[in-house]
Length: 258
Image: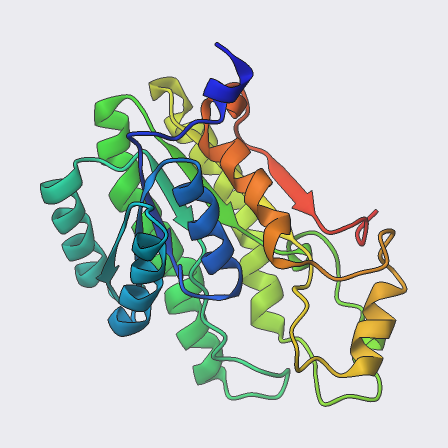
């Protein structure tokens, strides 16, 4: 195949959970720009519809749906709607995340709520869509992790600010990498590929200057992640360009974790 054809997602269908979020929005852009019909899904149907309309206004292919990742019934309803209208999706990007826990001292209920979405829900939606992919004999699943999937937190990054990082986030992002490898082994014999991307911190306009400075001091490229940085990585893993890559975690962090 010509190398340009390897990256072409024409005629493919991609479901992106949390597709109106920080990284989710860029992921939707990337997959749609590469030719896929992108289904933007989360609990906020109005927000997903707005994101899909932005893509449609650019002449790209998109639609919106909604579901609650803490509910298996809601996940299965989403699956059934997509199977009815599109068939088994070619690409599932697990990008949705709940940040119900904000600090070490939060009530355990916040931990439980986080696990319902980020652990149990992650497995439930992966299983729901992997099974029809396996029946079809084609498909790829991409889990969105974090640098917190592979390293301990550097609390010095937050010195002089009100920011911090929570223990549940590290728990489920580390677990996401293990689940990626498990699912790659489980589904590989049917030609299904399962990989992860672990991005670094995304630069936000409201980030305190001390945090940005302290974070970037550790980054080889001396900056935080920007909108376009994830686009090439996700298209690579979603396309035939990575047809012999599975069970891997691509770290996209400017050298932060080296």
